Image (cartoon, rainbow, N blue to C red):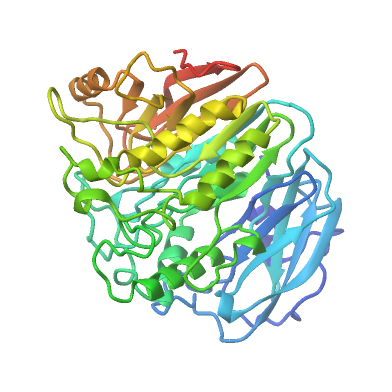
Length: 510
């Protein structure tokens, strides 16, 4: 286990022989510890990593400022080969500014590939918790990564994040709905409300900063960030439920301003590189991370470039608009980017990280169809273009990683879902939620009906949880981890199902 915050610097005192560079003079300018939101790392490369923290004396300060003074603060940082920081390889001082919510994004370079590192921050004599991170390797060494999504604060505790941390994966891939924008009790779960959102429904920059600070104050979420580097992309609730490009699902007249505020707050609170710094009402989150010669993660944005949902996002049966060949969810430029990147990839596995179920999912028994217009089912022609492009690209082992659904799924992706004999071109692994929709359940009769209607769906589980994947040259193993409850703390996680995907075959072996 890596060093705990207490072991890193009890009482805010430095460990002997491992002094951080001097920043603010001792004298306790701050009355309390400003590292209440923990630390994080992300977007690793073979020789670098992003280190993140955000200073907040009070995460629930109503204006979203974290009760920080309206002035810059100097913060020291340190990266070491060992958890006691006796072998420091890089350090420095950076300025946390109020216009960036006193957040820091330190891009460290010149590191060794495939190596574990530890990092921490200090200001005014206070020392942050220590985080564990790693650079990407060279070669084809096996590695483990967790897939997570959808963590509605009010619906339950973040025990699943704690269970991820305990696994000490090499990487965490978070596929969206890191926060929810609703006001208190604005979206209730069948199992009730466990804890309340602070503030109102998110509309302003201060609102989004407050909401993100509240979520990041959770110790279980912090533990998952401290355990491994993360790759993050957003879905809809980081801005507004079911938004589509410039279109607000609620008809908000000031939606562009809200988008800009949400993007700014999202960047401030995530371990992202400067290449993702927002530009007004836009932010770039589609990007690639290569894990040696074994894997490439191609991360997509299925919100900023999509057309509005078909049929008013409501007609789930007989909606011909969803079949319009001109409709797009990716946008032409991003579709070209992903297909070109897949065709050029030379790694054994190619993971397409994105937000919403790609496989067709008809939940109506018998004649007719009941489809979700916010998913790829509402953009059927764009899905066909992508899947045919994957088939013709020659890419090795494409696997789509998905969030949003609040249920585990294991799917085969076919260009023609109407033909069960149509060959699968990729596999899709859909993670359940961390907490959204509250305590889960298993309705085996409903699952059996959906699987009969959709023979390309091999597995569904409505319990909360995450997926733990192990990638090697020969196969990808996916363990679907579930928790029986999250409205109380302490639930154990268990492996409810395991599928292996053999290299060279788009198939799911139970």
